[in-house]
Length: 137
View 1: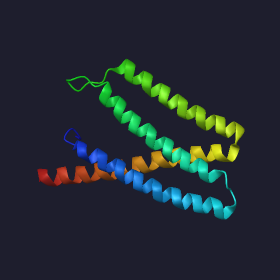
View 2: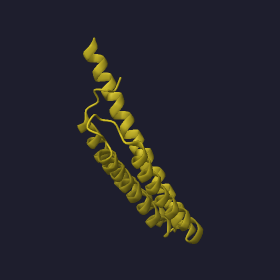
View 3: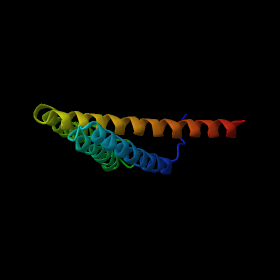
View 4: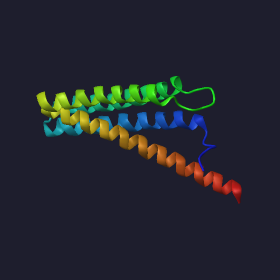
């Protein structure tokens, strides 16, 4: 169904996600400062940045472990994925334990990044599906 989804659209999804996260981050930081939660704001920014770095490393890892026939070598890909997610989770959990407001901000920033990425991908997929359906008619 999505086999013909253009690869260039993936980069556009990431760009839209980055713009959405910058806007959400600015709003969240302003909201945190207004409410007096000064340590939550840098946590949100750090969480958004970790989400972006994670996604970029995921893309690089997928390209690195892809064979010439388009299949991913599962073991090394899974190893890098688990390591990357483990490091990000450790950062978030350590901050929750030792600097609670900042840690919750990181978790909120990570969740916001994932939500924005999912939302932008869903919009792009729906547009693609609609255009592919219109071309079939």
